[in-house]
Image (cartoon, rainbow, N blue to C red; front, side, top):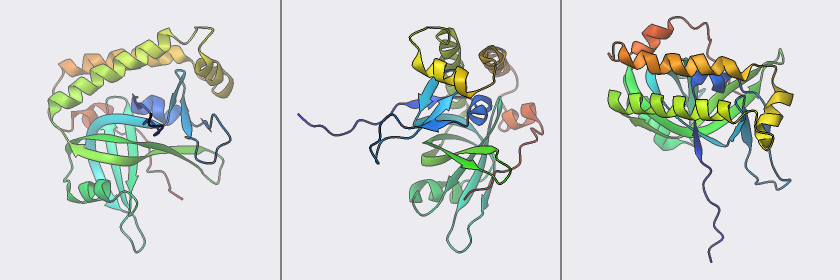
Amino acid sequence: MSQAPTREVARRVFAREFNDASHTFKESDDERAPVYLLLPTGERANRVFLVGTLTEKEDVGEGDEYWRGRIVDPTGTFFVYAGQYQPDAASTLRDLEPPAYVAVVGKPRTYETDDGSVNVSVRPESITAVDAATRDRWVVEAATRTLERIEAFEDESNEYARMAREEYDLSVDDYRPMALAALEGLDESDELGSDADAEGDDGIDAPAEP
């Protein structure tokens, strides 16, 4: 029987919760063991799946191309970075013209700044241009998964919820109105870039990358 490793599930998570996450961990001492980002609602994420509006892109590389994309969902902003080790994703970012709906599968990356804060970004495995219906389905799925995690948070057998309570000084119940507001927003204008318009100036500057 094949012992080939299975791919980790790509978690659907809204930008606000993703950016609140800062704690990473491994579950074994194996050098090649997966690195997980601990979501505040009590789940581990080695990979994430997000859909939103690409509002900006920029080649921030020195010499080699290194693309940064700013992707907005109804709750906030994701930053994705793709370079020579993610050639397909980098090529897609190079060719896309914002605003555009995109679906991204990738791995969370954390980076501690000089002042001790932690920036979280996504290292994309794939970036795909999608339509408004795909974005809307993702919002529904992400809201559903978020609410499910909140419901399971107080389960005594939920080890990741216990870990989240220890690592984060956050109220998990704050993510419930966030998810519901994202769902309610689907009834509003569905023009391209509406996420960015609804979110307004979120005050998030592009994080530095090491």
